[in-house]
Image (cartoon, rainbow, N blue to C red; front, side, top):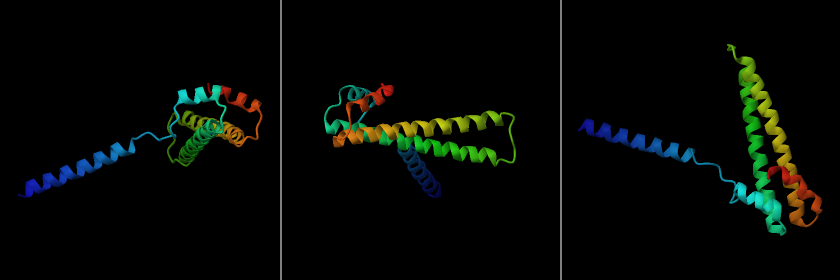
Length: 137
């Protein structure tokens, strides 16, 4: 009787942990736009709704890059505060520093593009602003 109860509890625990793992591995959603949709909209966006979709997309991308930069900063702090320094310590520090710089730069670029598309969605920007988004094609 005890063996069956222990086995039942073990099965419940494993099922609950498996459900938690599956749920945590879901990809983050970025609205309904996929990369192909963004490329199409960058070429042909004309309505305020399309510009608003692009603005939301680039806002989300900016937030993602900011989050990545914060994670790299945490890793850099962890490496700098480590009591033991591995042989490849300089490589790890350089990678964390360079990745953080790259992510901050991309976050700034995406935020600027989001601002441009927010302005176009409100009808207050010129057609020159779409050219700044061509690098993501």
